[in-house]
Image 1 (cartoon, helix red, strand yellow):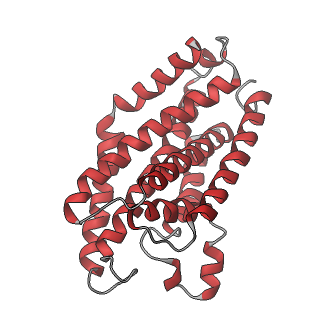
Image 2 (cartoon, rainbow, N blue to C red):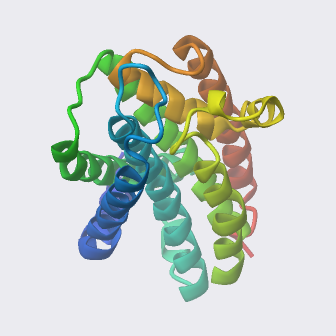
Length: 251
């Protein structure tokens, strides 16, 4: 396990040494979203009968920050290592592809949780929040961050330059997160868009996480749990297959 722990610590230190960029900046971004959308739409939008819109917004912003940073950490680390050429120093030691996968994913989950807690600490002053089902909230935060961290590993393996990774993030990750119910309930959408939203796996992560705070959701949390676990299992198998083959890592 020495190789796994060393790689894990290296990945954690990588984002921690630039915490102003990797942690403080996402917290500030989420806080600005809350101030702008909360001030603009508070009193005009009512999602659930007994929940203020600003309160509804906070769990969505927390989870969005968790997911985006989990993806950013693993994907950016891999693409930087590939472009600078120091990926060879990770591949040469006797580290199995399972340890390689676990170190990158777990380190990304650590960053995601640190950012998520930072966003929660910064926004909780503006709303009155309580945890109706804390185990559900923790479960979806863990599963969601693992899914996006794994997807980040896939994107980092696939991309050969920063432009490709930026395209993946801008045209895949960002639309999926912004159209996942962070700022609205899907029941406020027309029927056709409600149906389309149900094909977005990030919607289930955010909806399940929000259930942990309010005890109400657009989809039953058990159904969301099944969808997210299925996504994680499928992505994990695909990623381990790529790592085992050494796809775009060994030349």
